[in-house]
Length: 382
Ligand code: BGC
Figure 1 (cartoon, rainbow, N blue to C red):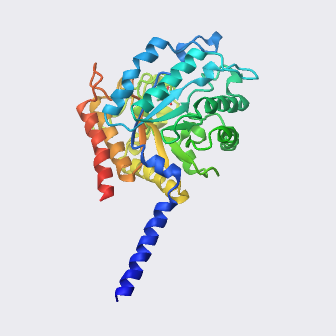
Figure 2: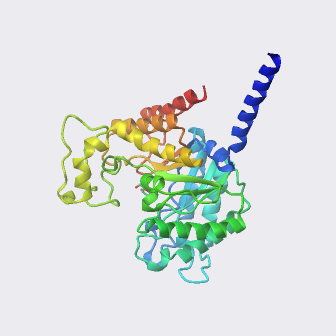
């Protein structure tokens, strides 16, 4: 009998250690990401001059003001900061693709340094390579590969446990195959220079969730896969001027659906996809459906044994009510806590922030939303 018990104990021990041993580096690093925050500023290419290839968009004084924000993010309980950076504005449009703005690059270096100094995982996210699509050479894949060659060179000596490389924000106007090819080309050059850094990789169609679950992982094992989740879009982007006709005038969309009054379709939305989504809002804003969306992402990660990270979600505060924004945040944080999906809120300051109006303090109901993630995660551990 004793021998039998001992035998079983050894078996259990062996299976536990093999499960632990099976965890990839990417899995282990993803586990540490937990709650994350986007710190937007070095992506604001639109503040620059077009004839200068937007190169002058970032201002040193403005960048320096953000130093204390990294401490603020850490203090608010976040473990990760995603740093969207428009490196594209600081590199020549033509071969041999030299850097041309040391000032800009220094600001990027500082952001990464401040993140690490505050014990945050920093994601260097290549944002807006294509700008507003008005400069065709900007999104030439050969140029993007060269951008990465230079970015990897620049950050290869950072701690791979603390600094991750996100290949490209929201690839769009590109087929699944073309993006896959481009991503592989980028990986080749990055891996030569930085073999140990974890890559964060999303898929075509704006880092869409559906694009991810319709795709297969890449061969490289040190990748955390990413998707963005702004559903229901007409709620999260009501009032947004950059995301589609009809949205700038759209207001009064509550989350979940308000039983009281139907959403008024702005004239500018007639006949557009925004109108279709307004008509389908009851279905789109259904929390059961939304939970299923997120669970499908998690199921994909389990099926392929790869970690995932929801790199952007949030809601614009121009017209959405605070109550609805908090309900939306609480729903998504509860779901991602239950499903154990690390995430990064879009964004710390600016129009999607979590602050009480006119302050830089997270509002009470947003704090409750954040706490709901922690609560659900703590239940998983038991
Ligand atoms: C874009 C931002 C935008 C946000 C929400 C990000 O990926 O870079 O400019 O505000 O999505 O739409």
